[in-house]
Length: 236
Image 1: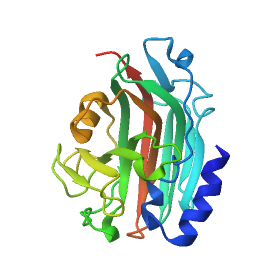
Image 2 (image 1 turned 30 degrees about the horizontal axis):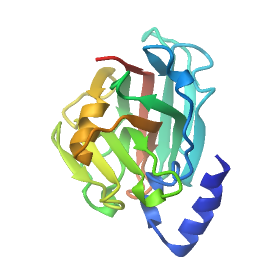
Image 3 (image 1 turned 120 degrees about the vertical axis):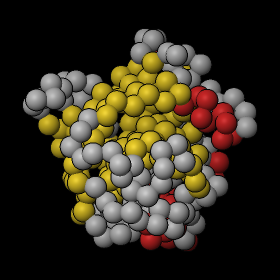
Image 4 (image 1 turned 180 degrees about the vertical axis):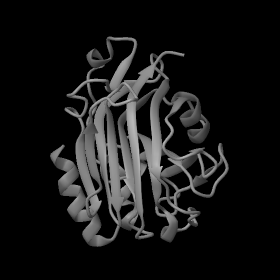
């Protein structure tokens, strides 16, 4: 993981990728892991227990979004609550996932304080009350790193996709929820990552190398709060 810090300083100093750091620089130094980690058919990344965040690391880009593991309440499960005030930091879990074995990503999330209808295709509006994304690492060829972002949009219709304003060639946004979804209500998501990535790349994609979540408001200067739970990969 140390190459991430080294490249972060170099790239940001020379202005390469600029504020696309929010999406890409957490993963430019990702290494490739053994398939032994994928022995189980279901791969849990954020489970229902008090050590759910043990394998996640925080990466800050602009201030600190506060991430806090919450004990089960009426929901009946542990969850991570994120609060962002003009900030952008995320949680990242590095691991290699074989999409031929477990192509489906599932999780629960909710938005407790949403953002308004920001111009999300612009740099000024590149903020989301909730986002979860998967990363295909380019290794040391950092310009080949790709990130597919599932977002809770304040403006776009569900199912819409668009290139990220800061890194249009490297990051694709995909709206799963929007302004018509009520605040404070849990939603269960299920997406076939292999199909979506292969459609974007134009060829079969077998591995991803990290999963990240982020509630960010640094561009708009707003405030948002969201929660995430039960993140795991499963077979079809």
